[in-house]
Image (cartoon, rainbow, N blue to C red):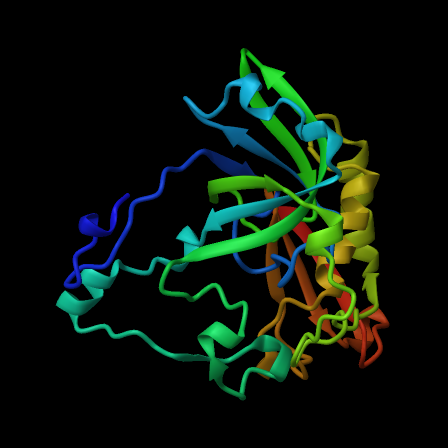
Length: 263
């Protein structure tokens, strides 16, 4: 696209969707706030004409990939639509890592509420699969919901992309994990699902579910809430959990899974 193609009144570009992300997490609540915090398996299904195996020749020589994606779940409008509806660009956001009360510039954060609505994640490449002539990338560690449009894929290059002396501002270390336990009811429900043919739940899912909840997906301002039960949608089930409940023998710092029911 040349410089003449841009117009100052509507400075926009159009990008193709090359595929879609398929995941067990169909809602924003429960998605890890950064990639690779949970080894959640998922798949990128490429679409025509970007699904040709020739386009991925050599990709299996790389262990990780950069994924550019669209934050479609935020339901933001285009800059032109925002102008017509009276919505304006908001230059500050509230990073959950800072408790949800401190505001920082949007370009000083990795918030998904951005003018471009673009996300960028590093994921681990597990394998490349060709189904009916179309490519499917099996990955782990994505921080994207099911159905996320994929904009681009590039190999991760360790010598240039992993900068060991980088300074990470307000997020220098991984967030601390909360301990997670299951109530007797939830334990029984999960065991029944693992033994039930066609449930889609097995022992690996148990590890993933507890790993996701250990990230504590609750809003920062609700971190001390010990009464409300929150629900995370995983595959076709709603996982109910809460902090501290003497009924379920949970301590004040523990998140307790209390129910696993069909969505």
